[in-house]
Amino acid sequence: MNTLSFSQACENNKQPILEVITPYLTQVDEVLEVGSGTGQHAVHFASNLPHLTWQTSDRLENHTGITARLNEAQLSNVLPPLNLNVNAKWPVTNAKAIFSANTTHIMHWPEVVAFFNGVGQVLKANGYFILYGPFNFCGEYTCDSNQAFDQKLKSQNEGMGLRDFVDLEELAQANGLMFVEKHDMPANNFILVWQKTIDLIQGEL
Image 1 (tube, rainbow, N blue to C red):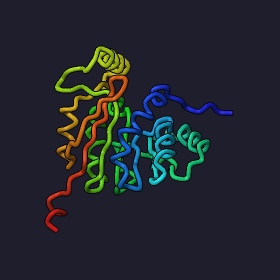
Image 2: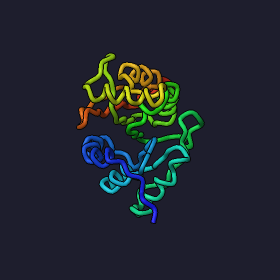
Image 3: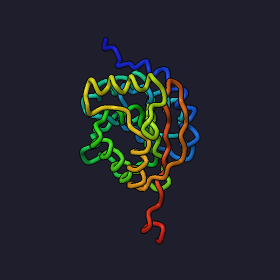
Image 4: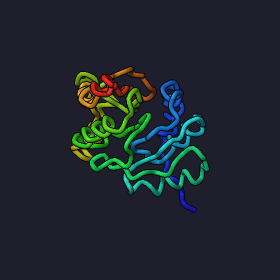
């Protein structure tokens, strides 16, 4: 019997995240998750939000673990993972909402840029982009533990590290995303929410 991939951090934060994201997802029937990891978030959110379909995605090497968890959960509203590499053409052409957790500090900066470009291309007008994780603000760490975490990431790979909200907001604006709200979360994490604006051509039709 195979042991499922497991993240204690996911287990700890899944309910607080659910409580914050639920109001943003009441009017949509499908969500694309970018970087589903162990699949723990997907299973928890989909089981508590039965009105929507949760589309998992990740790099191909993580699909086995996600699929195993989905097979165990047997939820009809969670779809098998798509092979989504932010640097390549995305396997979806539109998404009504996009969620991602703990991804931007693992990605190298060019991948973060590609990530936001992809969101801007596939997220439908008025759809929400919900991003969870540890972030810096105006070049400052929010706590000592986040600074230590950032240093640990960079010691493992110099391309990784906590991203600053100012830089992410610049990418968001360049991709037609309007900042909505920041939510303070447990363990010195945050949820950042953007909404896709209607572009000028669409607005004139």
